[in-house]
Amino acid sequence: MTRPFNFSAGPAVLPEEVLSQAAAEMLDWQGSGMGVMEMSHRGKEFISIYEQTQSDLRELLAVPPEFSILFMQGGAIAENAILPLNLSRGQQTDYVVTGNWSERSQKEARKYCSVSIAASNVESNYTSLPKPASWQLSESAQYVHACSNETVHGVEMHTLPDLKSLGSKVPLVLDISSHMASRSIDWTRVDMAYGGAQKNVGPAGLTIVFIRNELLGHALPHCPSAFDYKIVADSESMYNTPPTWAIYVAGLTFKWLKKQGGIAAIEQRNISKAALLYDFIDASSLYQSRVEKDCRSRMNIPFFMRDEKLDAAFLSGAKAAGLLQLKGYKTMGGMRASLYNAMPVAGVQALIDYMRDFEKNQA
Ligand code: PMP
Image (cartoon, rainbow, N blue to C red):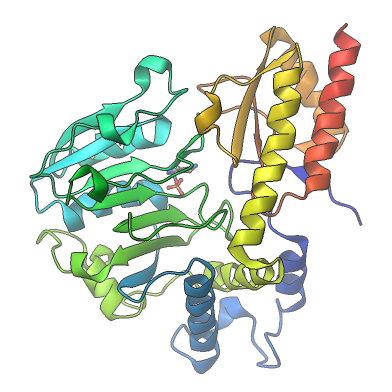
C-alpha cells in the first residue's frame, strides 16, 4: 500500500516503519501477552520501554547529565502555565514574542507572574526575528521565554540566542514543540526546553520537558503536584500515570531516528527538503513566502498565492493528488506545508510537481 503524503502541522506524519511496528505489537508486545496500552506503568515491561526511550532521546539530542528529561502531559499549552508556576517565583519574567505561539505563552503567564515583553516582531507581521542583541532583558527576570520555531508563522531561530555572551545570566526557556528532534540543540545556551510530541516524535498526549537540574524545586505552593517539575523529576515521570502509549511510540521513533544516522543526518536532510520547497516558491510567480530568508522555518512552510480565490482549487486538487492537510492555519489563510522528519524527500518533490502543474494551468 502506498500512503498519501501528509503535510499536517500536528498531529503529523510518523515514519511508516514506526506505525507498522506499533501495529504488529499492538496485541502482544514482545511475547509479554499484553499490548503496551494494557501494561502497568510500574511493571518491568513498561519500565524497560521507558528507560530505553529516555536514554535514546538523551543520546540523540546529546542532553548533558545536568539536565532532567521529564515526560509530562497537557501539551505545550499547559506548559505555558506550568512553566511560570515552577520558575517564576511569582516575580518578573521576560517573554520574546515572535508569532502565534509565543504570544499565547506570554498571555497565559500573566495569570501567574508579571511579564515584560523583551522583544517582538509583531510589526513585521511575524515575518522576521528580533536579533537577541536587541532584546530588552532585565537582570531581575526569573527566566526569558521564546519559541524557537513558530509553527503558524513559519519563523525559526536557526541559531539559538547566546544570552550569556550578551552578559545575561537569566535562564533561557524555549518552546521547541515543532522542531524538537529535527536538529541539534546547543545546551550551553538553553536552560529549559519543552514541546508536545505530536509533530516530530509521536502521538499527542506526551509533553517532553528538558530542564537544568538547578532549576528544579522552586514551584509556587499552589502548583499542582503532578506539574511540579521537581516532583516529576524525583519520581522519574511516574508521580502519576504517564502517557505510556505515546512514550512507547516516541521510543520507536527514536530508534528510527538512530537508524537514519541520528540528529546530524536528519538535520541535513531537513535543510535540503526545506531548500527544495523555498527555492521553488521563490522562483515561481504564483506562490509566495512572506518570511525573511534568514529565519524561514525548515519544518513549517506557509505559502500564499497571488489570488486567494485559487486556494480552494489548489487544496482540493492537492488532496486528489495524494497531498494531504496543506490548508494554512485558521488566522493565516493560504497554505502551509509541514516537512517534519518523517516527510520523505519524495513527498516534497511530489508537492513541488503538483504546485508546478497547478501554476501552469493558471497561465
Ligand atoms: N507551541 C507550539 C510551537 C506549537 O506548535 C503548538 C501546537 N501546534 C503549541 C505550542 C500548542 O501545543 P498543544 O496543543 O500540544 O498544547
